Length: 473
Image (cartoon, rainbow, N blue to C red):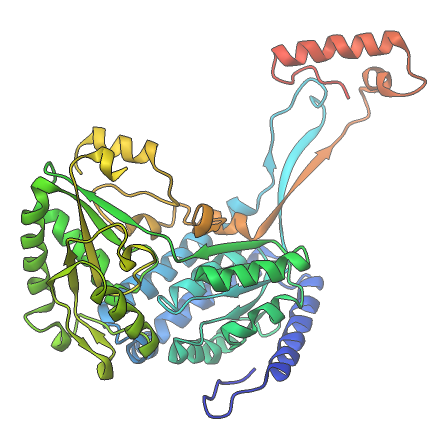
């Protein structure tokens, strides 16, 4: 293991050799059954919680350096979220690990039908920089709970947080089962080629595509949580505009807009547009003051590359209604609201990932596809998305009891709570048969006779009427 050094980074060959060694150690630990026992998993999850508690100030400092992230946001949206996941797993682990009995039929009346959750093996978890603690450690909780060994790769963009995880995790978790590597995003395909039992990737579509292609070469299953999708809000004249503006403002501008689930744009009914714009102005003033650059509650863009990309999008799209100021030296983009945005504008062609909120005007819900149950029902049933939230934003992605993941080009698979445990488990079908009903099952044996076939055909016709009750194979 090592610390990244921008002046003297290890070459790709060195990284691969290090990852090969970590993978070898983790594979040996898994094959020895080191991570299998419930008590071991509980101890590791408890140690993870203890790490977050004992080093809260260190995480606040690291995220402050990487993203100028306010302490409040770090504690609430990073540390508490991970602790909730770990504590939920600790409280439910025994139940999750128990074999699940399945429904029996006539043939299996004397047998046991079970589904047993087995750990996959050694898994690679690749985190993203926008929420570098949460997006590394929430999947790690699921992998530990499921009994896997893990190699964790935090993002190089959030270097201070990544190096803190690299430093702390060996001090709290088992040194043979859990490792941290600091490979760059351009190295991931070669690392995936080393052959893991599962790859969990969070990041953009381009990098996710390369990871998926590398995984396919070794038939490695993947979970992809990808950015690049568009997350719209629909606002009509029936909404409580004050509450709506407050919730949208929080969701779009926390972490300086660098969130995979923040609203990318608002589809606003024409009759509500002026009222919404005024309410958004008031909220921004209330949240961040007259000069958000001086606010202790507003973050910064992670690097100059993203500053340039976001600035280019906002300058070539719509008209600035609020904000628009940029200070490259401080990696600062003011909370910005754009109006008169068209579908063809550059900002509508890709994920925003910055503190810019475009507003498009529509005349009806039909153009968009609120507080009205009819509107909510139509939006839920007539649109496809990885998740859905009415009368708020983002929160559906933070709930430990709800699965979070994308659909289509936004990824595959899901996690959080029990869904994380399932993602990192193989659900093995187990049929424990009894030998007492050989007087029936003999019908399947050669030599094949028409009488036996007739009996089996008759039993099959009964099974179709009784949902499998009379299957006799």
